Structure formats: C-alpha cells, structure tokens
Image (cartoon, rainbow, N blue to C red; front, side):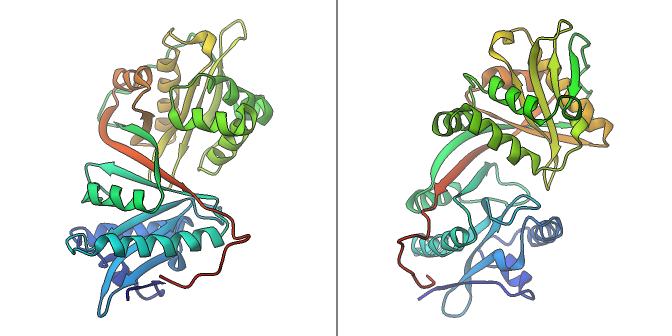
Length: 324
C-alpha cells in the first residue's frame, strides 16, 4: 500500500522528481530553495507518497514568512497518467491535511492557475480539480491575474487625493477603513468573510494577514478628498515571489468616480519607487470595475486562478489515525 512520509533533508531531488511532470526540475528546485530561505516552506513540510519501488506523488505545506501554521498546499503533483492516481491523491491529501491540522491550521487553501506556469507548473487541471473536490475542498474565489512590467508605461498619478500613510493614521484608523471599503464588495472571498465573521472581525483579520507580507508602513495609505473625507485605501506589499497590489478599496459613497485608478496608480508608483520591475495583482472575476482599472493602468492579464479551501476539524474528539 502506498505510504506518505516527509522528505528527508537530503531528498530534495527526489521530491522534485516525484511526479510525471519533470519538465521544469531546475526551476522548481530553485523555487523550493527560495521558499526555504524565506521561511515559507520547510523540509519537514514536504511530503512524498511512495509506491512499491518509487515515489508516485508529492505535496508541500506553505505559509507566510514568520507564521508557524501552514496556510496552503503547493507543488501538488502525482503520476497523473496512472489509472490509480485518484486513490493515490486522496491518500496523500488526507495525510498532509492531518499534519496541517496538527500544526495548528484551521483551514488550508490551494490555488490552481491556468495556463501552467512557474513556479508550480500545474498540468492536468481537470484531474487536480477532481482530486481536490474528493478531499473536501471547495472553490472559494475565482480571479483574473494581472501584471505590470517595467517595459510598460507606468500609470500617471493624479493629484486630486490626499494620502496619509499607516504611520500617520495608525492601525485603528486603517482597520476601520478596511471595514468601510469592504462593504458591498464584489470580491467573493471578502464578502463571505464579512458575513461569517462580522465586518469588524473580518477587517481586523484581513489587516493582520496582509501585515505578514513584506511592506514598509509608508506603502499602505489612506486616501482622502481635499476636504478630508475618506475615499479609500491602497495596500502595496511584496509576497515571497513578487511585489503585489495587496488590496485596493473605495468606500461606497465615493464609488463610480474613477478613484480606483488613482489608488492603483499610487500603489504602482510606490512599488516602482522601491525598485519593482514587475507588479502583480488579482481581482475577482465578478469585479469588472477593478479589472477595467487594471487594464487602463497598463496591466496585462496573464492567468486565471481558482482558489480552493477546506476547513480542518479540530483534534478534539477525533480518533488517532495512522499514515496513509
């Protein structure tokens, strides 16, 4: 019976090659090493499932730098051409989700990008989606992925707004702004979190999670009219692989006036000034106004993404199970 185990420190090559897709071993290995260095992955968080004489699948746990509990699965791969890959995938996911729960995770996500690209090269999307659904994952959001590159003209920064940084306004004011701009949002995930947790708690948790990303407090800014009315916010950051527009929001009473363009131009300029040669951002497929703002600003669509998630029950009252 196939057996799932963590890889040993000297088995990185085995982990990389534990799938039918070995077209990009050098790039995948470099990505893993960079995630180890950033603190987003650890050798003991990388798992292989072995058949009688060889590895037949792999997956790793991932988190934001500085966090102890995992947030996502990455580098999930199997020998997809083999007829028993659904059973193999179920065994692998069951074991690794148990490990994630034991490490303190309350839920775990997985993102599926199309087309296949660095760093995960996710071929066989239908097979992946089926495996996730069988393991209890649901689609929480679908997004369009945008990218601005230094070869494109940067969006011009308008001067009709007054900006104040996180350092100037303080955490409480910024969290309150997050709560206000997320009202009636077109983003499915943020809307669901407001409904499940309440606006204030969801706003605080969103702020804390975004705070885990690399950023300077001056990159996070609230925008006001010259008269002092709050218009919106911009949160520019760097995740472990790229500079990103983490969040843009406009308060309901000021929507429809093009302020998203002002905020996006400002966020792009912040990251450019910090040396970014590319900036990435995702927006919900239902958020047509934001997608149009990215296109007007010279961002190009480079992928679509489905964000999956599964809730993990606590250990309390659960029987102890062996490795799959």
